[in-house]
Image: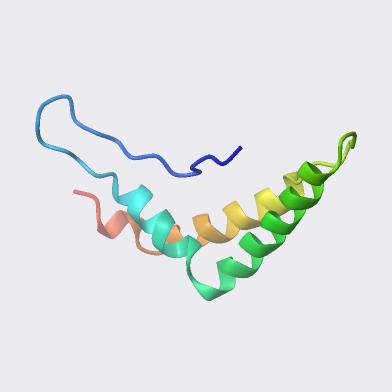
Length: 82
């Protein structure tokens, strides 16, 4: 079941606010050094979903990918905040 790792934050009125962290995470997840971790995560997820019974989980691959993205985001996030 696909899900979004990054969610947007919206205001309650008609103006939409976009969380800069979400935008940066999406951008960083597409950078070359993070796409290798994303590919490993996708491969692991495909392997786990193809089996009927398995105790394998893709936690390590998920942590590696999120660590890469968060490291990239942390370099510029605070410059986008007021």
